[in-house]
Image (cartoon, rainbow, N blue to C red):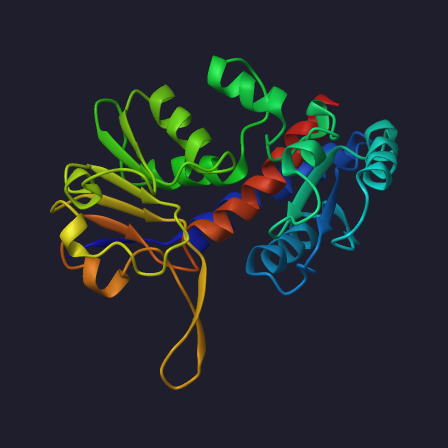
Length: 284
């Protein structure tokens, strides 16, 4: 019987510890503050955003959200973000966007001071991660590592396959797994023989954004599967639902452990956003 890794339960326990640390920090006169900037599509109904806002209230972190139109000029964002960089009561800045049409993500994210880059997305913080230097680490890769360690005391020597190579998840996760002494294979849309390579993995992580792509034919018996995918689909009855990159009902027959969607990685990622905010406030 597969272990279902309950990301929501684990995240709730982790958030209690964060809340306690925030309370202690406030006793010393420091009030952690997180500012989220969204560009393009309003993210208030986004699954991660809803969790983020609820969690900020629970752990008592001051969280403010600012939404900009998709056609906002880089100069306007530069001025706004510079004010946040210089504002001593703002400890953490999180930039979220849907598909950018008019601006480069890299141009926008690098407006944020690396010392306030809560999701470790700036070029400087990503470089620090790949060089093994201290810096902020992206929330979702941290969440994945945390969940893996609930079922594996030691990751050293395990073969991990990561589906997806985005700069926000796939690449930093690959580096974190290497730092944990895994042997890591990175697969992407140009990779060959994906199914058979996946079947060699002790740990399979999917961050492709391809609904139910991973079936049991991709998975080695007893492997651990972490599903990062969040896909909105409509079934034959016209009912909208959220599914992962992994066909959960099919794959759970052969795995040793697996996360579900949406109660696997997403709540843990939101908890690490609070964790990283707290870390920046402590070091500010």
